[in-house]
Length: 385
Image 1: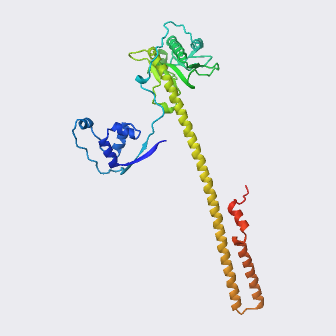
Image 2: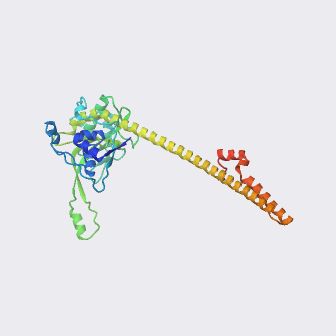
Image 3: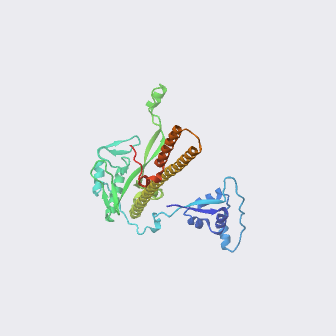
């Protein structure tokens, strides 16, 4: 979980001029660029280029003074401290041994799924870009033009063979909509070979020019697409948390995709480990949210019960006060009757009223029925639903 850390402008200013920004940013789990933005937003000047080199050589350049607080700035700054993620891809130099993955020079493929892919592309359809797709089965792991298909099949064949040599399972179920995956440490990684298509403004054909001249319906496309033959191998459908990962290898100016397959194989276990870490973190976060929701519901229930009892006690108090007032009223009536010269009939009627009020005082007084008070306090009143 992320945590908040509060510092004053003066404290952050002192830190920025006593610790290099890259090292200081690590304390907050931020990048040096991110922390520098926070400093600039709050009007905190930063050391210029070469400042730390001068410090190392024994020179003490003057600091830029901290200016007064400007509009929209506060004396205290709250920084969300980012916890380090439990997943990261190693650098290329730290991958360890990169295997050599040979790619066939002829058009024969031997891996069963490469052979199955080749058969699937015997009957194809073609979209407006020239991208071919099988008509009968799904082969989402291959998105290329007809000209690039033979080379893409050779690369796919070499990749799948190398994956199995490294004890990874390759899966492509027989169902028509199934996807090809490589199983690494119990994690299914979706792979895909795609071709880059160049986009250029559509060149009108003579027929399209003639239709425009006649003001007929213009069905000419805006763009033309040209297959470049440049291929890219990528890992698809990775979690959002891994968006910073390098997940694709492509033909470049100095090397072909065939030379990247060993690096691709070497990185697979690290990707699988990261995917597993993301799932575990999500599971922990989900469990935390469920526990928080459970605790919130328990707190709500307790508060509702407390409010109910407080309301019952308020009703007790109201009844007790009312009974006291009624009894005082009865006493006042009796005192008045004893001191007044009234007729016997009227006195009898007033005494009847006083008796009724006294009886009503007992009725509203909660202290006359402890069983009822206990029941009301402990159990909610019955309601009609």
